[in-house]
Amino acid sequence: MHKYLDFLRNEERHILELIRQLVEIESPTSDKQQTGCLAVKLREVFEQYTGGKAEIVGNKQNGNYLRGHFGNGMEQILIVGHFDTVHPIGTLKRNPFKIIDGKAFGPGIYDMKCGIVQAIFALAAIKKIGVYLNKKVICFFNSDEETGSAGSRQFLMEEAARSKYAFVMEPSFGEQGAIKIGRKGVGTYNLTVKGKAAHAGNCPEEGVNAIEEICRQVLYLQSLNDYPKGISVNCGIITGGSAKNAVPDHASLIIDVRASRLTDSEILHKLISNLTPVNPLTQLRVEGGFTRPPMEKTAASQRLYIMAADLMNKHCGLSLPEAVVGGASDGNNIAALVPTLDGLGAVGTGAHSLNEQIYIDHLVPRTALLAALLEYC
Ligand SMILES: [Zn+2]
Image: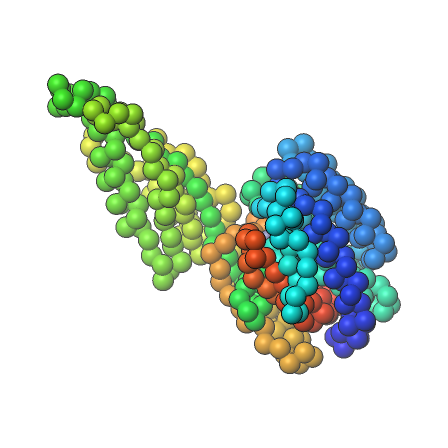
């Protein structure tokens, strides 16, 4: 790993310069033109720095994706990242790229343009130093991750199924840059209740109150929470009724559901899909499901994590903790298909906020770590 650290220390300002260039092309998920521009830019820099080949993967709905090819061999390693951000156009004016006290700021810098640059420079280091990997590395960078990867999921899963290991360049967790070894699965459900309208003054007894029913359902759903087990059920948005003096004949609810374990996500899905009315005169309709399954720690991903933590400790004197987090990423979509380490990207803070920042002194060690993992795994 020392050869990578030595090489990359001399490249630090080039790494930062490329991060600046990517941050300054704003790329909210919904902006097809901007994400498309960034895909073209990424193809150019991927080929320029790594000597590999990259192709744009077209996507009708949102912006295009990028698939980079590096090296040759029977085995394939997958590197995953996204270059869309949650920040609308104009955020760059409010949080321009700047460096202050060892921190670099900008929209999407932490989540996760820095991680993409780290991947490109890890491959550049391998190429420039002349290490022969005897395996193929595929980089798949999408531009719809922040809205759930609807268009890119299939591509990612196909590449994952062909790969021996996958490295996700999402930001790390916490001040020490923990690796994300597990992520909760995420589901969204819509519950609608149909009751019967009636005049609240003249004939309330003829009505069936949909709001009353949905409140009973909320109490049941909230009772499913089991935080120590990693289960959360959040009744987040509730609407209903049309007038103060009318018995409401409709009410609806949006529920965010998360689970650390696949078996729990399946149980929750059954329970929520089969909700039954407390008041038999109401009708319930439930739509939705888990859009991202839980990313569970496996024996193989644990081995990979231990390799990473040892490398970091031995060569950089840095500890590399592990964490299980509630937020989902493309790691959730692929972890069942391939041993996956997530959160290998930037160390910093402020994801999805105007305070988004990375800690510059972690740039070189983490980029070197990825290069070393690619060589030794
Ligand atoms: Zn992200």
